[in-house]
Image (tube, rainbow, N blue to C red; front, side, top):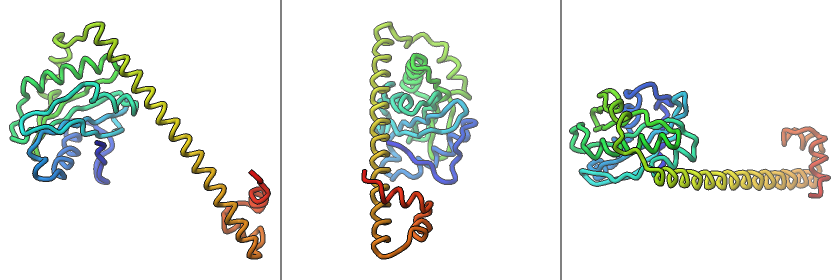
Length: 227
């Protein structure tokens, strides 16, 4: 689920404080029941740290949330993000990473390397405070870890999935282009209909041009266009 930024939220991430400032407000917007569940979000950015998207990847139980790395990176590939930050909440307010938290971070680092997408940090948050894996030195340790270095077969599967996502992205872009062309064609038809209606009412070309904010020559060309 795509999370919309508020008008007062920063669009650039300079550090973990910026991340918490945004995600604290996101968490506070949740209803009371969902606040008591673990959420896992991803912020996708470009190289300059500009936020491209914030995505809720999964909503779990009070104590856990299940994450699949390719679900995390799917949107990143679609939106050309080169850097991501993982965020999840601990409803208990205890901001100590669990073994599962460390494991998923390790796996995300490894998959990100294959996709050339950097996992910059992982934050655990509550409604009042946060802890940053980067600030605690955990990211440095996990970046050296060999625990989840994928086998050749896994790497190939991830790359195959990446190609599939790229094809989906291309299809979406084609659909957008098609819709844009159809919208442009409809606008032209409507403009021509308006010009003809005004002509039928005895309005001269110069006045029509002024109303439509185009030149009289453009009005004449539009009216005479039989397509």
